[in-house]
Amino acid sequence: MGYAQSDPLSAECFRMNRMFPTIHHLLRDSIMVRTAIAMGVLAVLSFASIVISALIAEDISGRANAVNMSGSLRFLSYRTLSEVQVPEKRQQALETMKKFEQRLLSLERFVNNKGRADSLPVRELQGILQRWNTQIRALELQAVHGDASALRQMSNEIPDFVDQIDHVVHLIEHELEERARWLRILQMVLLAFIIPVSLSMLWMLRQRLVQPLAQLLQASRTVTQGSFSARVEHVGGDELGRLGQAFNVMVGEIANMYAHLEDKVEEKTREIKRTNEALELLYRVSQRLSATDLTLDQVQEVLREVESALDLGHSMLCISENQQYPAHVISADLNRDERHELCSHQDCSTCFQRAQRPLLQQSAASGMIAIPIGDGDTVRGVMPILNTGEAQLSVEKVRIIETVGHHISNALINMRRAEEKHRFAVMEERSVIARELHDSIAQSLSYLKIQVTRLERSLEQGLDPRDITDELRRGLSEAYRELRELIVTFRLRIDERGLNLALLDTVQEFGQKLNFPVVLTNSLSGLLLSANEELHVLRIVREALSNIERHAQASSATVSVTVDAFQAVTVCIADDGKGFDPKNTPVNHFGVNIMNDRAMILAGHLDVASAPGKGTAITLQFLPQKSRQSARETH
Image (cartoon, rainbow, N blue to C red):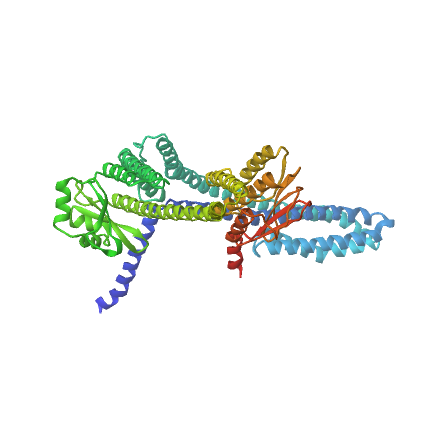
């Protein structure tokens, strides 16, 4: 039974032991809790002081009013005595008596409310009230009605009654002083509590808050100046103590990081330097491989530069047409032993298969890597490179090698396209020369051959051959002139200045030959026509101006090039010469036919407007190829 009765007590003790250590730890480890408790105590003491002072002040104020009221009772008593002695004022004495009675009752109620029933002021005031009701009031009423004996007795009783009132006033004043003394005592006691609590709180704030914060500020300034040896002395379980511990740990870590910062900076500098060198290498490679006149020797020089920069072995370029093996070696700097070692143990298909695997796997598997050469997903060649440096290439080197492989692939593709374009240009130029010779010199030679046949027959028949020889002479002169014009035409080129300046040079050239200026009006944009279209337009203009020089006998000529809203080009060459009949072209004249052929090549139309004596106007109209393509894409 004893054990059972003590069990609840033990549990309660256990709970108290758990609660009080928690409070103890809070007071010890939290400056916020201590500050809050001190502020709470100060607030409670201040509030108590204010409340008690207000209550006592209210009581003192009421007692002072009671003293004033008691003083007015004395005044009214003597006033009543003076008024009843004068017959004319005896009715006014009744009003004074009423005021006296009202104030006496008010004073009695106040004293009863403020004091105990057995207190001395209450007993004395009850005696005054009883004497008033039983003696003084009746005596004054008799005096008011003119009773001489009552008047004499009132003169004797009033001073004693006033002394009794003064005694009550003295008792009230004594209680008033007692309340004031208690007020001073309470204020001094509360002040005696408030001052130590305030000083303790100020000391605690200085020791636990101001000084630790000053240490933290000073230590932080020291750290900002570059010295990481500063440490905070205030470390403990409170908030600023934990902050000081964290600050010391942070400064230690910063000092450790700063000690290794130079090494990291040097490492990053080396990485940036390697990156810049790689970028410079790739820039030089891309610049050299993007040249328009690139050759395989230049490609090989680029490979040597890459091999030297990346510490690689020699390399070679192999191209396979239509997956035919062995592949064709187009460039290599391998010596005989390296080529024998590379190509004797494996065939070309092995290199092509290896080129389709990632470079990191290749460098880890053997001392040779193979870079694919091709366009898109089609592998048309391979570039084997011997790896004589690292056992396995780094990621940076792999990226550089892959990028170089892409540049070389693009360069080889561009070289092939440039070669094909050059081949097509040569073939087209040969076709143009053949067409020009066929349309001009071949026609003239055919005409001369006919004249030679006529000459032979006339000689056999014994006729006069001078007319035929004159025809032969004129034909030969015309053929010779056409040959020179063709030579000039074939040498004609439009340089980087464009068609507009070429037209200007042409009209100036023929203006000197014609001895009058040829007026040029040109609204053609430099980006509208292709190179082939520009060349044909220029040749048509030269052919027309050449006809004006030889046949027109003109005094003025104009060349007009306009473009309408639909990008259609109109070229008009006009003169005021003697003109001709377009339906009756003279024999051995092929200029109009040649211009018609060029207009057909431009997918345009050539119109010749002329009549004898009315000059000639040759008009070319065509839609440029770029405009035709845009129209097709729009539709």
